[in-house]
Image 1 (cartoon, helix red, strand yellow):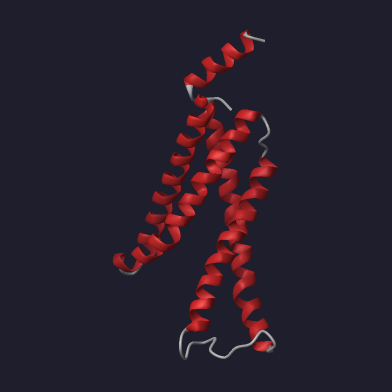
Image 2 (tube, one colour):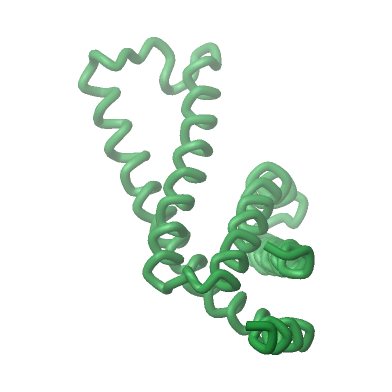
Length: 166
């Protein structure tokens, strides 16, 4: 990959991350009863999610430039990364509850049926929602990134030079 293409991929990845962060920060702040109450969620959830979106956005641009990107691939990758992110957040919250003295999961063993009930009631719906949101974001950023690549005038000059050199 050329230096220009790598620079373009990183730039569009940063645009994706910033757009994701601003959009979901506004949603979080608008839905919170107290604005300061949304700050921990923004810091601990949206910053890592924005970094993930930026990284995957840059990878999506590399695939678009290589001609290997497709809508199906974007949806499946978004679904998979949405599930991975939600499962890590769920695991973080469950371990905090399990290690807290006197918490809801205090003394709960994987050999008990209550453990599997808590797992099915909390994790499975969260994974479904996370996968669905990841797929929707993957599709949306696929179209946005394709548009941003096509809208870049330097990209057209580079394509014309590479086609003339063949």
